[in-house]
Amino acid sequence: MGHSERRKYSGEDEEIINLKLKAILKNGLKAILCIGESKEERKNNQTAPVLKKQLEKSLAGIGTGKVEYINIAYEPIWAVGTDKIPSSDEILEAKIVIKKILASLYSSRAVEKMKILYGGSVKVPCVKQVCLDPAMDGVLIGRESLMPYEFVKIAGIIEDN
Image (cartoon, rainbow, N blue to C red; front, top):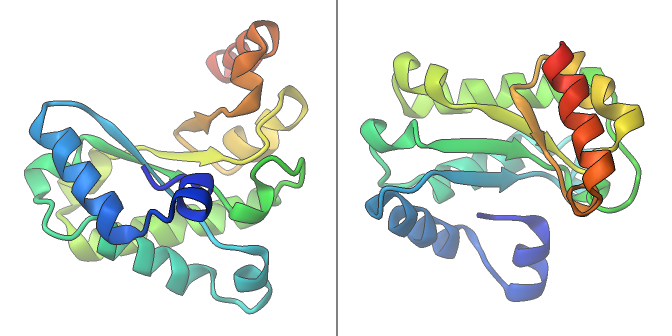
């Protein structure tokens, strides 16, 4: 839920995302919630407030018992499909911000069960930078998932570490 392209082209906002998340959870499924800032928002040091707004509104009314079935994908809009990727430090900073926001909303036990992923131009040459170095729990692979050989190579790099 919440992929930047769905937000942009389908007009999905946090209210719609929240309803979809509730429907997913009601039906016993797991979800990935995508959040991220635009290039302009990053430039204006608005990453943390943007992530906070997206998380709080998207997760509104979802209890501690259900939130553990949601994984969060930090997917900066400016990186999606652009081959521009944030540094390991920028990704780690976003992960820390996300964890702090989640900790303010839910119990530490529930937050520990949630995985924080990175998404945005994930390719073989940058897996270490976007996943391993910033200690992300995994990656959300976009266009590379359509190329089986590349997808398997990415999975192998993560599994070996």
